[in-house]
Image 1: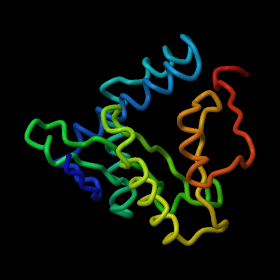
Image 2: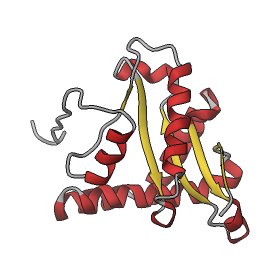
Image 3: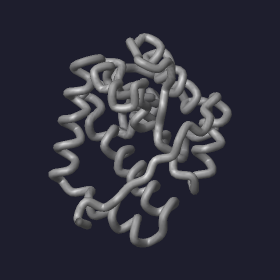
Length: 173
């Protein structure tokens, strides 16, 4: 396995990145909330969502190419399945959302877990966050309390609880 970390490139990486995004979303739905949550996550994964999400990635990367870093297994590049992980940190302009750098998503394909690629992606996220002009000197993220694997990873990287996110469906009045 020959891994390379580099900024996302729309021409080379869009298909592979979105395949991983699908796996990320389906994992959130299936593993951390039962059938209702899984159905809600699956229902949003339409072609329109794909285009909208990939366009948003392009806009974020235009502000800072390091916002989306991909891990590419160069030994798989010829098969077209080369993107094996990614990390998505929101651009500096969006740091006011939490008054901090925001780790939007990090995901590694199951076959590449335990290889150190997630640690390398986290290092890329931390480096980008350190370069941002932040109101609060921290990197924040949302993690489902039921996702023990993710919680263990974040604990290992020095993350600790800082408040709690709550949500409410918009269709309720």
